[in-house]
Image 1: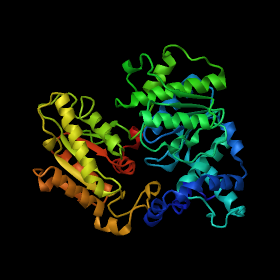
Image 2 (image 1 turned 45 degrees about the vertical axis):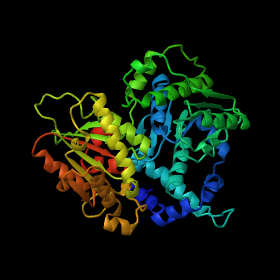
Image 3 (image 1 turned 90 degrees about the vertical axis):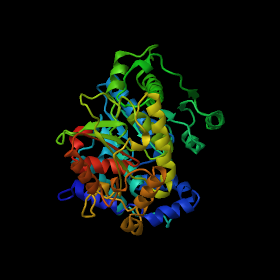
Image 4 (image 1 turned 135 degrees about the vertical axis):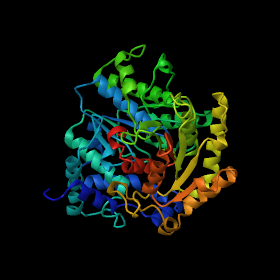
Length: 482
């Protein structure tokens, strides 16, 4: 392993990223590429010496869904660790904010760099040493996400974890997980495909049509139980470690997942009311970059409000949180409010009208709800639309490198200009010199630093987890945010 560092692992991993053209081809395939993902992943596992059945020893709580997967995993992880202090608990989530090793956690902490490098290169080397493929069209190594998933499986098996909380979108190679959970509602009921024979399946309340599909799929797959989780008595009075009213539904699911798992694997009977241990676990749960308030540790005039919301629904939750007494409307010992800056980016500027428009509508509703005299059109003093490039010289932090952006679009800041155009259309009275289109996150942080010279600043960063991670890196917030 001499000379094969964490940085070397990240550099190798980045060669497995899909570029913009590949991603577009995948979308254009109508899901054909997704259908081969599971058999290919099984083949990769076999090439490094594992079968899908080997993964059963990980004792997996498998969480899927369109929204809320990560938060549900964070709550569940916290509960299991607080109840079973002697256990080694693995957590796999995606994406990461600042460092790819954040995706693979042991007892709440990201894998140390040396451990990530060791497990990474063990997988890398085994795949190179055993390159016999059933299907000649299968790539020699899986692409980025699947490779990290396989590294996570290898790490957890090597470390002999007692329990694993696994957040997975479509990748379901487990034969018999311990319990399955389906999070927040949204069309896309194929995510019920993770249901397994003899495994209890839990879900949050869903629209009637979707609920019937899930129930039927659970019956077809012979799940041992299909449970729509009830509201937990007393939960609403607890201040959760993850802010936002929407988190109570995720916490409900996590409580029931943990109850089911601990009864099945440790013989612990669920209690009628929340125990002090559960309450402490829910209060202490952390999920960085989601409705997170971070006072700047050096530039004390600035408070960062970080939320990687990237769908219309999650952006609505973000605004509900920010435009409230928990966010920008909090009481401050000052005669004037802080200056407010919005830093935003999203995958496509064509979504700007819908995303930014819905944010403004929800913001106006929130101001009315909290009986504020402010107007949403003047709520922000500056808006910044910047690319997810980390540094002003055009470079990326290794862990934040992305090939998913078209080089032409990036060079022309196409998405960012479309977002700025959408903002001007939605708020025609907004001063033109306070709308910024910038080529990097470092440029955006510079604008914030300049604004600090005039007094306190509140900065909402949203629209992209990659953007939030870049802000944490460039603004040097990692020690307090992660």
